[in-house]
Image (tube, rainbow, N blue to C red):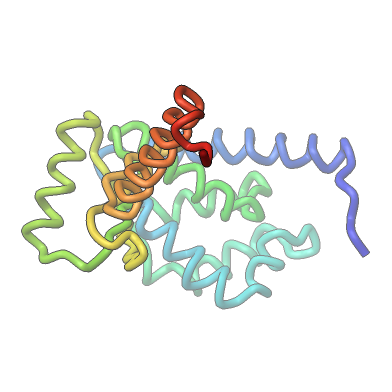
Length: 206
């Protein structure tokens, strides 16, 4: 059965996003020059705990589990694994009954950190794997030409034949041989069609 989205669901989602953004901003502000450490530990909390132990997320979200019980869980699970700053932030979420939105907070905190540090996700699609020096050269070129600090994810796609494709947000920079060949082929077709349209008599049988 397909669940239909209701206006109540949509409002709830928007409210959660707004709430998560407030806590994400507060977390980054509190971390100061240790934003990287905070984000790394919060991401680990999601990938290593919430993703692997779904029941833990249910505990964090449950109104039936008391504040003190949740604090005890945080101390047992994270006490020896994260910094004082990160643990304190998790306890702040617990105090305000918001530990259930931890996943959303972590995601938005990562997005805000990238904006603050002028970082931007970049997907680099290559025909073949490159050696480290050439890969660094491409990344340096992206940094210089785009005016950002690229956070590069590399994907190998042999169908490109040679060259590469760069995706930054909704923009695509295609320098692949496959696309170059396709453009040449299309240009030849266009020239042939134009010639037929301009001088159709030359192509009619006599």
